[in-house]
Length: 373
Image (tube, rainbow, N blue to C red; front, side, top):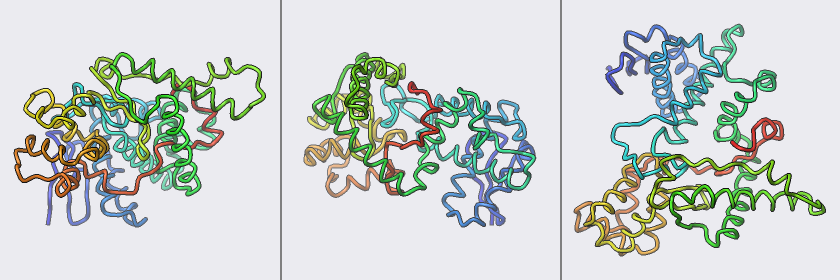
């Protein structure tokens, strides 16, 4: 039995055969290591779902390498940094773009953060597998002594991404999971204290100033708790306050919600006012702008179920009316059908228990990462 999955018209693809999933196509011989890695994962009792996901993650990486005319043997930490940049800027057929932004990072382009994390885990694991078989071919992902010797740009870029945003690397330690949730609760409480609510809506051009104001205030509070006797904290606040970088599209959005969710942490839904207005007045489903905004949120794979649960939870009756209009289904009921609708469009939101939105770092890594990341 043989099934074929064609992702694009590229000369690389993943084929499923009786022997497992293999990379196929004219360019496949250049990436033979990829076909040896899934067997190792299976031997390590990785789930079939994870093995399949890693196969397609590595397919995406190899296609990019082929476009760059780069062999696996020539991959360096700098290569991986460039691939990260590619993932963050990629555009996809069918993604709404425009004023629909990632619920997690404010992006209207690029892979979702969870996808990038999984891709980097797959790539790192593959190179670790190669290094285990052939010590003369070390992984290009800096580790141990190599991490300490790496240049600052590599530490703050690749390692900052792998350790500061990849739960697989940090949350293997149950103590870090507990610490992460504690930090998230503390940060959320301080967000509410500063803004007066866990969600405010501001014009796009004000996002940077509002967030930078909060981060400076937050940093001062943390430093005050660490050293109540300090006479002056101005220099420390200025040096340690992270700069909030706003994606260009977000600054031009008519409105952006600044929200700190109990589970997802700090999020920035763009064009939020239109979506909220539609939930508050279901008749606005007839307005093209409001219709596009809500359906854009629903169809975007970079936006979680959070805004729907929050807005529909405020009045399920109005949510029912809204989606009856949007879906053209008079019998739709949010209380009965809402969860199934979200599972259909946001299946990843239901696949695993959530991890803390705040990643506690070791002192060594914290020192390596710049405050402005």
